[in-house]
Image (cartoon, rainbow, N blue to C red):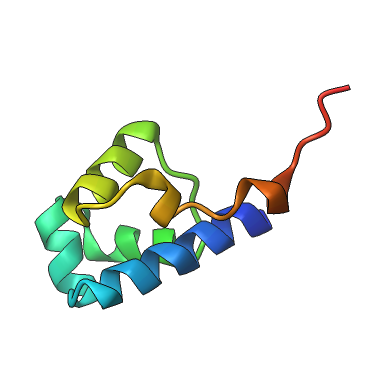
Length: 78
C-alpha cells in the first residue's frame, strides 16, 4: 500500500495507545474484526470514509489528529 495509508495506520495506532486501548479492545469497541483492524494499523488496507468517522468518534478526536500532514502528501493537480 501507499506510504500515506501506512502513515495513517501509524498515527491511528499512536492515538489508540495514547487513549489507553488495546488493539483487541478498540477493535471490539469500534465494531471492526480485530484482524481487519490490525490491517488498518499496518497500512495494508484503504478504509472507507464511514470507517474514518467511526474511528475518530471512538477516539473522541478530529480527523487531523489521525491523518498524516497534508503538506507531506501534496498532489499535483496539473
